[in-house]
Image 1 (cartoon, each protein chain N blue to C red):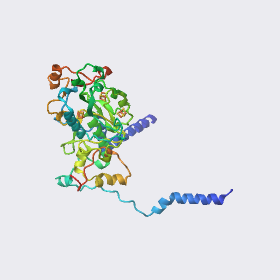
Image 2 (image 1 turned 120 degrees about the vertical axis):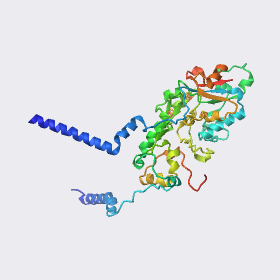
Image 3 (image 1 turned 180 degrees about the vertical axis):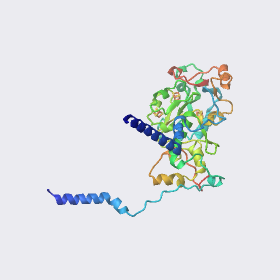
Image 4 (image 1 turned 135 degrees about the horizontal axis):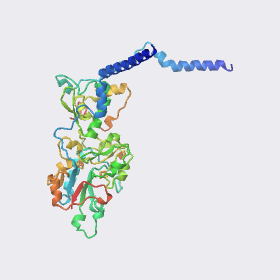
Length: 133
Length: 273
Ligand code: SF4
Ligand code: SF4
Ligand code: SF4
C-alpha cells in the first residue's frame, strides 16, 4: 500500500476529531431540561391553577394551530377549557394574561430547544413587569 | 389443518392491531385529536353577542364628512389595528412608498374616475373622499391569492390570514382600488406605531394588509372602529340582506354610487355624494 502511514495517521486524526464531542462528554450529564416558571401574579391568584387545556407543554403548538384556524377562518373565537369555562382562543389575550412572564415561560424552553417561533413578530408581548403599565 | 392455522393467524393479527390502536388512542386522546384536526377545537363557538349578518356593507355619506372628521375616523382605525406611520423614503418624494393604509382620503377624481366630468359642481369634486376596502362581493384579490391567505367569509367580509401571506402581492395588482398595502419595512421599528393596541397583532415585514371590516370587533358585538368614531352618522354599517336594517333604509332614501363598478368586483361600500 502506498502512503499507508499518512493515510492511517489521517484516519486516526479524523476519527479522533469526529468522536471528540462524545469522548469529551463521557461521564458528563446533560443540562437539566428547563422548567417554565409559573410564578406570575395571575397564576398565584388562582384558587385551582389549571390551564385552559391539558398537556399544553407537549401540545401547545398543535393547539395554537387549531385555535388560529378556528378564529381566523371560521370566526369561532371561544372554546370551553377543561374546567368548562369559555375562553377566547387567543395567544396574546388569553395565554399571556396568566403567563405574563414570556422570558421565563416561553423563552426558557424555546432557547433550550434552539427553536425560534415567530409568534412575537406580530403578536404583542405582554409588557415586562416593572416597566410601564 | 393448514387453512385453520391461516385463519387463526389472520384473526390474531387483526385483533392485536385493533387492541393496540384502541389502547394508544385512549391513552393519548388520539381520537379526540383527530376529531379536532377535522372539525376544529372541541366546542369552539363564536361569542354569544357577536354581530352577524349574511352580507355586511357600508354607506359613506361624503356630504357629512370634512377634513377634520375624516382624520378622526382614520385615526380610530389606525389605533385599533396598530397601523404604523412610516416616513417618506426621501424627503422630496411625491408619494410615501412605505405607507400602510386601511382607510384614507382620496381625491374625488381618483376615487370615482368613471363618474368624473368637468362640469360637476366643485363642492363635490374638490372635497376628498374617505375610502377603504370595498369588501367586494366578487373580489379580485381572493381569486388571485395563491395561498388562500385572502379569502371571503360567508358574511361577505374579505379577510386576510396574515399567518399565511407570503407577500407575493398578486392581490395588490388585482385590487382595482389600491385598498391593500405591503409592509416593506418592519412596522415595529423606529416607533412607527405610536401606541400599540395589545388586543390586535401588528404585522411583520413582507406581509400585505387591508381593512377587515373590523371582523375582530364584530366578533365581540362591537361596531367597526371607524363607524363607532362617527358622531353624526357619517358612516352606516349593517346587513345589506336585511330589508329592515338601517343601512337599507339609508340606501332606499338616497342616491348612492360605488367606486369603479365597471371593474366588476361588486363593491359593497356605497357613497352618498
Ligand atoms: S400577498 Fe399575501 S394575500 Fe396577497 S396574494 Fe400574495 S399571499 Fe395572497
Ligand atoms: S376592494 Fe380590493 S382588496 Fe378589497 S375586496 Fe375588493 S378587490 Fe379585494
Ligand atoms: S371597518 Fe374597521 S378595518 Fe375597515 S376602515 Fe373601518 S375601522 Fe378600519
